[in-house]
Amino acid sequence: MKHSFITPRPKKLISTELKLVFFFFTVTIAMLAGTYSFLGYKTYNFAYEHKAVIAQEKGLNRSIDTMEEQIKLIEAEVKIAEQITTDNTVMKESIRNLFDLVPDGITLSRADLDAKSLVLYGTTPNKETYQYMLEASLRSIFHQTYTSFYPIENGWYRFVSTNHLEDENTEELQ
Image 1 (tube, rainbow, N blue to C red):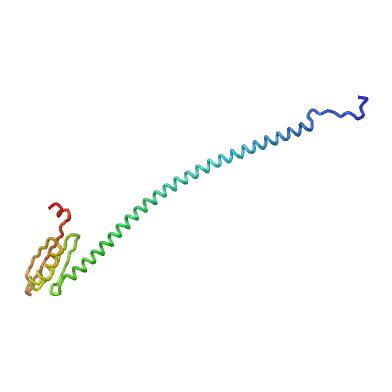
Image 2 (tube, rainbow, N blue to C red):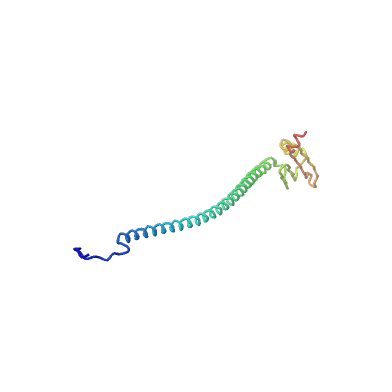
């Protein structure tokens, strides 16, 4: 080496270019490991959130079913309340019509009104007044009308009038 114009440099086992390649390989592997770890964490987190959402969905479905049952119950109660209101209105009209039927000469002391029957208790000056003024109206409304008269001390009569509507099923059989 005596003929060289420069002084010899010691040779290194790993050159600078090789160090640069190892550095980039290391960074690339670190980035791949980081990406793999990140995706693994996100997959685990997604699975955990998916289970939580499924549990929440089941809970919501149960509460929806419960609410639907409650809605059906409330709708049934509303129908019952409407039926009661309708029945009360019909009953009120029936009672008003009943008292409109009773003439001035006849005094009612009690009236029992059922769905298919009416029982009247009262006093009348005579049987004919009752028969012409009240019983004729009752016979036009009810299918069966029975009246019992009991004389009282002042010459008037106490009466018990039992009136029935026939059941539609009974009429169909006859």
